[in-house]
Length: 80
Image (cartoon, rainbow, N blue to C red):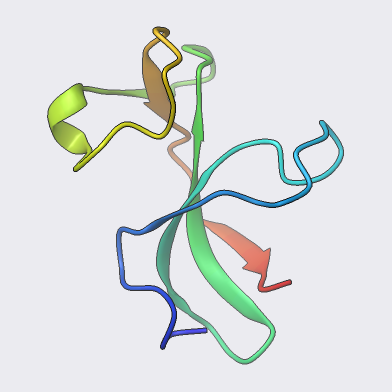
């Protein structure tokens, strides 16, 4: 997976249902051939999420006018 992504890339899952890969993930680095560390981006300002400004992105993920927030927790995500 490391040959496809670099730290800071935003990954958007192909299956976008609520029980699938609904939120975009920031790629932090590979753990092994099955898992990687990532951070979730959301529109929720609850639970201590950190507001992201436009200058935090090279380009916006989509045209949604709502502010984006970083879920302040390092996640372990399956590469699939």
